[in-house]
Length: 323
Figure 1: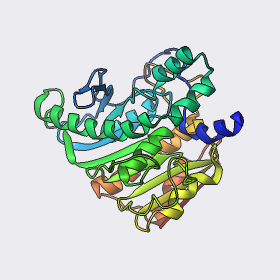
Figure 2: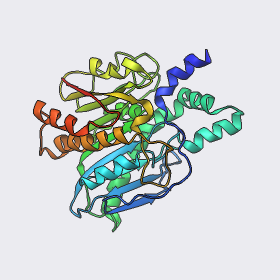
Figure 3: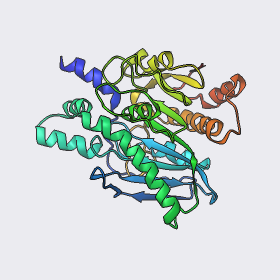
Figure 4: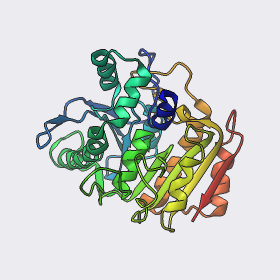
């Protein structure tokens, strides 16, 4: 029974990050870490790291949501690349499902890592609070854009996207209009115009059921792989969401943990999947350019060119379906 429960919840989590390694200098103007941002209405801290582009004029905002047991640095490599392409990127940390929270569950419950991850996944608190963290982060970006000299006038809040992996994919899906099971209230974030979910969550009735996808009207991109943990369940969104600017990318040989790479930040993985990281660094900015800047299209020839540029190493083939 325990192994079944682990398989059920495992798609939501990333491995614990290892000790800090050497920093890699990446082409972005500045990284500003804000570890304390208290949402007084919830008495909840929402740590954030901003990756700022070199441009000083207003640029679109991209929110990044980490997987379970991760941190605001879990997707550093992709965040830095998006900033290099001219986006203001803010990486959130969800304190009731981050590294520290899982370690707390291990310590107070006298349980192992896997059991702590399961407990985190079963907990309804992070399921509701994560989308509210996103809402607060956009409000905070508005304040910083108005009042803080480091950010003033640099964020275009009329163009916003969210990128999330695993439990962060759940977060992006809820913010885009997918209705979670057992959570009251509307958690859709109407200011978000594009959602990109890495390892999107299935509609098997645990976090979402098959009826919860029908109201997603914004462009939505799901990216998974042939070795991702939930198998074809990661395709459910594509079947269940209404037509119109929906994309499914399927990377052959990519695993669940391929989609999270903290390289360049204060923490590191022992063996990050740099081949998948490269593919994401090619494809994700192009998708942002299409939907936030309107300066390109994702027609068949463009998609084919992006796939060709993304291939290499273990990434032997990428299927890209649209509807």
